[in-house]
Image 1: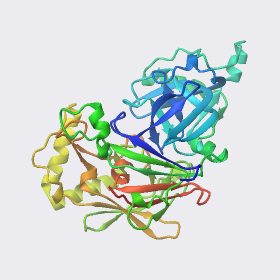
Image 2: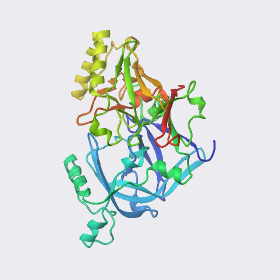
Image 3: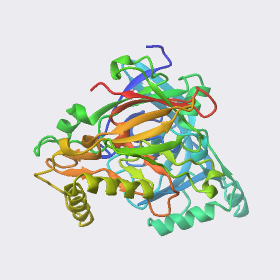
Length: 418
C-alpha cells in the first residue's frame, strides 16, 4: 500500500450502534475510540479518554463549540493538539489540529464510544470565536481552555449556551479529512466496509472480548484509497452523484418494495434547497434507515399488501421498544420479507440501485442474543423531507467516498465480499 493510504480496522462494539476508529491524541498518544460519522465534520473527545491536563502538545484557543442532537448534546472548548491514526507499522499524523474537549454533556451521546470523528465537509463543523467575550470582561488570556463556563448538563441548558455562542463570530475549523488531504498525508478519499448497524451478540454468555472477535462486529476504514481493494467487493463500483456538500447529499429518485412499483421520492422543500440540501443523505453515523414520511407510509402500505403479518411484527417491535423492552420473536421468517430497493442519480443521469435486504433492516441478535430490531424509522420530528440512508443500507455495500472526483465528490458502491 502507498504511504498515503491506510487500511484501519474499525468495530461496532463500543458504541453498540455505530462504528468506531481508534485515534491517538496528544503527547501521550492516548487511544480514544471515536464514532465515525459522515453526517458530521466535528472531532470531539470525552475527558474520560483524554487526559488533557498532561498533554504538553495542547494549545488553547478562543474557540468554543456546542452541539445538540435529537436525544442529547454537549459543549466544550476547542484546543489544538496532535492526532494520529496507526496500524500495521503505518502512521498518519496531524499536528496542531483542532479538537473539541467535551466538558458538559447532557447524557452519554456516544454510548460506549469516547467521542466523534466526523468525515463530512467543513460546513458541518461550526464553532464560535469568543475573543470579544473575553475582551469585554478583561479576561486574560482570551482562551476557552481551561473551560470558564458553567453550563447546565441538560438539553435546555446546552441549547441556551449554544444561543449565547451565536452572539459571537462563527467560523469553521478545517474538517479532519480536509486537513489530511491539504497536508498531503492522505488522498482526498476514503472507503467504508461495514456489516451491521447494531452490535451482534451471537451467544448470551459473550463478553466484550467475544464481541470484538465476532467478524460481524468488525469493519474497515480505508484512508486515501478505495477502488484498489477489490478483495472487499464484487464486480464493478457504481457511481452515485453527491449533489451538494452540506452533507453527502444525494438525489433519491425512487423506492421499490420487492418486485412492486417504483414509488417516486418527493423532492426536498423549497426552503431547504437554498441551504444546499437534497432529499437524501448517505450517513454512516445513523444506525437507522430514516425514510421521508411519504416513503415510510408507502413502505408500510406495501408490506401490508404483501402480508399483514409483516406489520404485526413491526408493531410488536415498536410497542416493546417504546416500553423499554426487547423484542424476541420466534416466528420472524426473514426469507418471506422483500428486499427494499432505492434508486439514486448518477453523475451521468443514470439510476443506481442500492438494495436493503431483510437481514439488514431486521437486525437479529441485536444488543442481546435472540433480540430483533427493526431498523427503519419514520421521518424525524422537525426534520426536512429528507431520507437518511444509514447503516442498514450501507452495510451490504463497499462505499468509496471519492471527494476528489469533482467539487462535491461522488460515492461509489459495490456489494461487499463477506
